Amino acid sequence: MSMIAWLCVAMVVVPIAGLVWSLISVDRAGLAAVRLNLTRSKGVQTVRPADSEHFRFTEMGERLAPKGYTSWLDKLLARAGRPVGMPLARLLVIKPALALVAALLGLMFVLGSPSVGNFLLALFVTALAYMIPDVLVHSRGATRQKQIELELPNMLDQLLISVEAGLGFEAAMSRVGKNGKGPLAAEIVRTLQDMQAGRSRKESYIAMSQRVEVPDLRSFVRAIVQADTYGIAIASVLRVQAKQMRIKRRQRAEEKAMKLPVKVLFPLIFCILPALFIVIIGPAAINVVRNFMGNF
Image 1 (cartoon, one colour):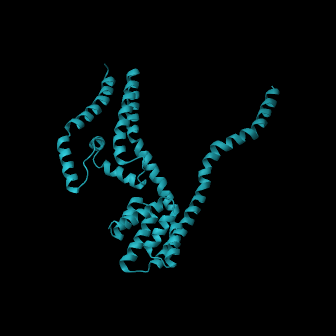
Image 2 (tube, rainbow, N blue to C red):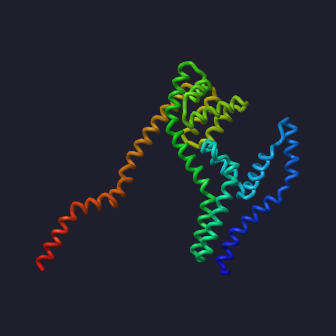
C-alpha cells in the first residue's frame, strides 16, 4: 500500500480507537455510585437507563472536544437563544459523528483514486463536517443579535411610556416582555425569572447583556445599573437612552443608504454594463465590420 493509503487508514482508525478508549476508560461503576449518592442526598429519583446512556455519550463528546471548546460552544448557544433542536449535549455527540462519517467517505474516495490532492480534500471535508454545527449556531446567533438591535429602540419607548404612566421599572419590563414576541422580549422574561429566583437585579441585568452581546443593549444595561446604584430617576435615564437609540437607528439607516452605491458599483460594472454595451454597440459594430470587409 502507498503512503497516502496508510494515512487514510490512520485517519479513520485513530478516531475510532479514541472513541473506544474513551468508552473503556470511563469508571462507570464509580460514576453511577456518585450520581446515586447525589440524587439520594437531594431527594431526587435515580437516573433512568436511557438518561444514563445519554449522559455517557455526552461525556464522551466532552472528552473528545478540545480544552475550553465546550464553554465556547455553550456561549454560542446562549447567544443564539439556546434553540430547542440544538442543545449542547446533542451538539457534542453530533459533531464527532459527522466528522467520522466524512472521514469514512473520504477514505473511500481516496482509496479509489489515491493522490495528495484527494487526501487533502478528504481532510478538509472532515474538518468542515466537524465545524458545520458551529457555523449554523453562529449564524443563528448573529441573526438573533440583529433582531435584538432592531427591537431595542421600540422596547425603550414602551418602557418609557409605562414608567411615565406610573408603573415601576420591573413591572414595565414584565409588561413589555409579555406583550413582545421577539428574542428581546424572551431575554427580558428570562431576566425577570432570574430576579424572581433570588438573583440580584444587577447580576440579572449584566447576565442578560453577556448573553446577548449587543453593544446598544450593554450601554443600556450599564446606564440602568448606574441609575440603580446611585439612586437616579429611572424615567430620565430611559428618556435619554430612548433618544440615543432612535438617533443610532437613524444613523444606521443613513449608513446603509450611503453604502448602497458602493455595493451596486461592482455588479453594475461587471454584469449590467457589459450586457448593455453588447445590446447597444453590438449591431453597430457588426455593420462596421461588414462594411469594412465589403471594401476588400
